[in-house]
Every structure is written in structure tokens, then in C-alpha cells.
Length: 173
Image 1 (cartoon, rainbow, N blue to C red):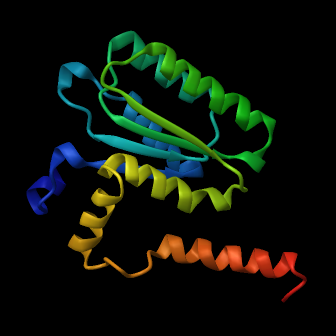
Image 2 (cartoon, rainbow, N blue to C red; image 1 turned 180 degrees about the vertical axis):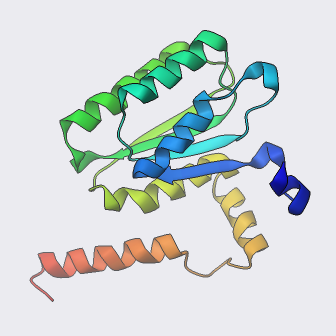
């Protein structure tokens, strides 16, 4: 409400992105939706490489007990090199959501072959592609921001990191 009154924000195109503990508010916002109160606060969320606590599963169950649908887009990811506990809990949450068969839910997931920090950029890039309708949607956003053809900060950071890793593997500095 405040953003809409201050800026030209389309409430049907509000998105929330988060990584690590910052992804927990994305999940919370998704599961907090009360269908009697109207559409969800966010049209889509990106939850990148977060941990899954019992509280998060409780929020999901609480939503399921109150609502037959979860009308939004969700992109969830995790890093493959995080270990077994995160694999098990990530898989459990995704399996639970898919099992609910929410008609309005678009759920995409990806496991990135990287560590925790390396999951940020690809998670956001793939998540934004889902939320904005692919590369065309991302390019429209970049045009509006005057950033078309310029490197994105995240892509630049990933490229720089990959370069350092390649140098390390090759015995460079």
C-alpha cells in the first residue's frame, strides 16, 4: 500500500527475492497468504539456498489447512555442495508443495553444482526469468532501468569468481 501510493508499482507484479536466511521471508510471505483477504502480497518469490526448519514446514501446513491454493510463482534452489541435511529438507519441502497440487502455483526448482555463495547469482537469474517471463521479461526490466547491454552486478561477480577459481585450479595467483 505505501509503495503503490509513492511509486508506480503494479501490485500484481510484486516479487520478493532472498538468499540464505534472507530467503525465509520469501517462504513466509508465500505461506502467510490468506485467501479471504484477497490476492497474495507477492505474485512470486525466489527462495535461494536457505535452510528448512520445522517452523517453515509448520507455516506451510498452516497455509494448507486454510487454503486450497497458493496462487503465485515460486523458484526455489539450493547448492549441491551444502550437504545431506539441506538436500533432505529441500526435497521434503518441494515434495510437499508438489503433493498439494495447488492449481495456481507455478513451482520451479534447481540444484546448482556449487557452494552456498555460488548459488546466489544463478538462483536470482533463473528465479527472475520465471517471475518476469524469461529473457524478454528480464530485458524489458533492464531497458526500464537503462541497463540493457551492461553487465549485471551479479553476473559480473559470478564471472569474476569463476575466473579466480579457474586461476586457482590452473595454479595461478
